[in-house]
Image (tube, rainbow, N blue to C red; front, side):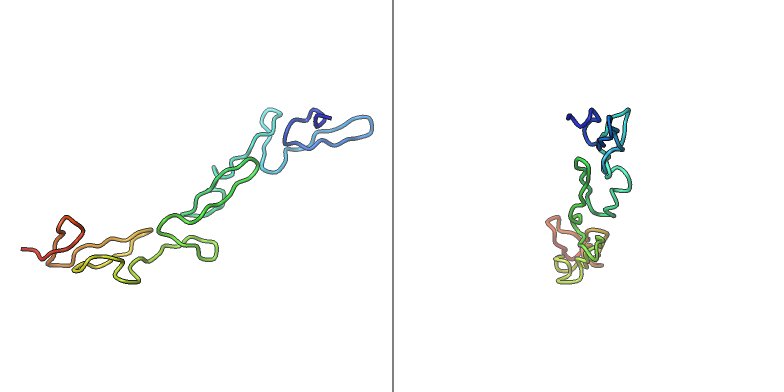
Length: 123
């Protein structure tokens, strides 16, 4: 009845003529006699790895998808090389440069930005 008075998220074990309260359930920690949620994401990103979000849930956690600019490869998030095809979508007279999680499109030597995303010949 009423979990033996052990409180939420704690095992109550019935014994002959009595009961005992066990340790907090997995995903919870004892704080002054109460079992409170453990924020697994607060330590080492919950083990989710770099470039991946961690979401704490009651008694557990979940790892999200890879951040923008990264893709999953065998459980790790690795940089996407945007420059691997079509010059990364960079305009004419520029060269794609892959960066961690993104890319840049600097104008080639002898060209300058036209202020609208293109590269024009320098004067």
